[in-house]
Image (cartoon, rainbow, N blue to C red; front, side, top):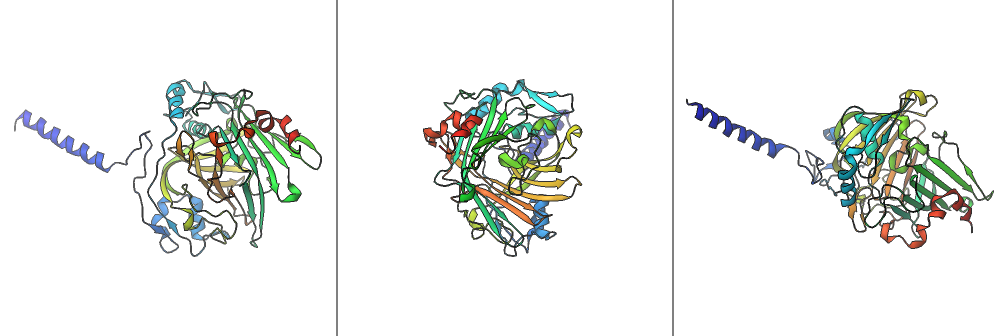
Length: 440
């Protein structure tokens, strides 16, 4: 056999192998994110067959199906699976990633924490690698795309409802205004909003119902300097004054099963105070394109758990990074959570699920997060739209908290160009002084 024939045969076999690999490997979206390797469209997961799909379930979801705790899947649970939908990130956000990604770096702090330097917008670490891989992924979550202005209300208010072991429901409804003041990438919007220098984001929430809590307002301010703790101010209508809350009170319950560190769509802790390690790259079930979700608890939820009904929409298989997030040793004493296991979508960096453990490393809360797909003006459909359903099940105290848009699907949430000018008032909705205007 000639050398030339051997070379030709080797080349032919190599080409055949490459062809086979290309046709069996997972597909990729235009921005490089991996799609689900095994899509399950048309499948319905029930109590009878759920173990066949356990590889697509976070640990907390498995516990709910197993019935290990008082909170458990209802007997009629049905999760209908549709195709995985990839909505490309905004062009401006991608352009900022390409322009600034290479200049962002990690800085090690004296207390053992980490922070970033050189960040200007987009994904800070588009190709994260060691050292500090897990923390870089956490930073990508922190700086994920969000619209620069989101208003939930005033006609359809956001809601927070609690559910106890006796199926008693208590709800609070209110007006929510969220701003991103720095690192903006939306078309026609300056990177830093005038009057917002030094601030990364603010959230403003005013209670409208029940009547006895009306006008109670909270303002949260996050800063561009990650080492500066988030500030929280509260306006108490009964006293007609504003007070600044302690920056150390990160474990205080907010009238529900969540803490301040659970806010901002899954995690709002000051990230220099946390370690993050990548546990695995997985595929899990998620529901985001919520079309017919009812806003009313309990009638529009699958009870007694409060699980999304099939009418809410289809589930899909998403690629996620599973992060183990813990307080750095120098700040761990007295902190409520021993670890936060967070499942972060690898395409748009939002959190889809969390398993929260107490200081003794016992499972405490199971969390389903549903970022709602909404069409952002001049950009198109986005998962990180500023609208979300959140489900928190406290399995140790048999209590639960649910939140989301009051109209049932998030379409009434006003975003960017759709927000009336009155809500753009920087002084009123992003500063402590503006809280003095709440009852005027």
